[in-house]
Length: 305
Length: 248
Image (cartoon, rainbow over all chains, first blue to last red; front, side, top):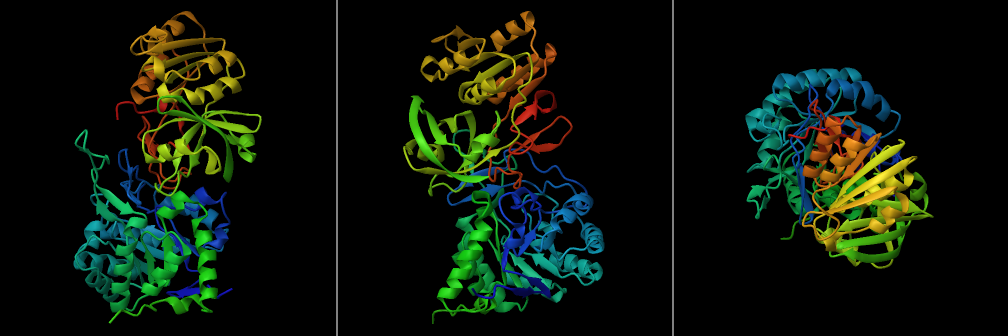
């Protein structure tokens, strides 16, 4: 039994397994399937200042080893989250990571103020949602945008760590990561979904009502591993790695690439117990490798010469 | 809950339509008509497939589904072994009423059998199919319903019309407390309009593409008249027909 604890930006996680935003609701949805205390942290469904009803249906399409989604940030709004979901989640030891998405810098600031007052463990600043026109991605694909949001949030975030969620839909993710670091980010999470599209060849129309959507699932794991490796190698900030992670071995791989925490996302749709199974698999792996602390895995990759 | 359910029987009822009976265990005590099971269909497809419960009794669950892709194809090929099942999921039918009309279209027919069996009062079933070789389950409906009306789009079996024609006749002549409907969206929309015209409460079971099945991913939403997007897997798949936005 290895030591699975991880100190991430000053927050003590019991283990490095996290569930990715948008894939685990507010935890409640999976509460009957497992003990949420077994999960290190939960990134809650992306929150916006006002409630949002999201995009039109169909919102999902299965693809080879993955899926496209264009949910479009349907959520009850930050106030409803604070009032009803957060107190429920607080009965568990699992860390609460609030995912925040705005139309404007001022939106991010207002939500941060509310969440800081309510008390969450980490703020995940979503500047990378590909599914809403205004929502975040405009900030996430330019260094200027990432900088302005991060700086503004940091001014009001108090002692709560600010983690910036990066988009893979950029030419150079390392430059955005560096910008977020220089603007004061305490941590980074990556990757959000990869923008994709499928077309029905019979009707000649896109399969998603919103035409395009975010690709997730095992298909994106190699891209996520590569980007986490590149960012970790160049930016000295704690990293929550995600993208196509399904098993404990995937978690180990993501940590070896440079992640400190690892989130499962689409895997939870397939198997509600995936986070717990991954935890046991990771533990077994560490024992077999005679690694006593999970933190010793982070960044262990040695490139081939 | 999540359970591995042993397959008891599996057979083809009609071209591309399969019936599979599984051992229910604790799922059987929880199941309600209109709910569904979310089934892992092998390693070749990622997401589970939602299959409505056709019947539940004596410790067994019966599922009837149409093969529409690699997931359901895999399911149709399973003759023994255990299925990885989540369920029972969703909000099903309310089956109270002295006399209920059941309206099913094609692969929407199976879940109504369970509703007929669970109904507290009388039921009359109107079962519509495209053509004679697609007709399924009529004997089972005759066992539990007061009346069964069969229709086909091409007239090769039963009455030559859509299911909505006998529905309107019934609504004109009889006294019914509720309509329960499951089938393709155009049929459901037509049923909802008739229910509205004759002022009979109507519940419709909607089919949407699903990922998680437990209310987390928000992939399977149905839009209501007040603009809310509700989850087919959680608030549904059965909705009050009056609340559904039919002209989305």
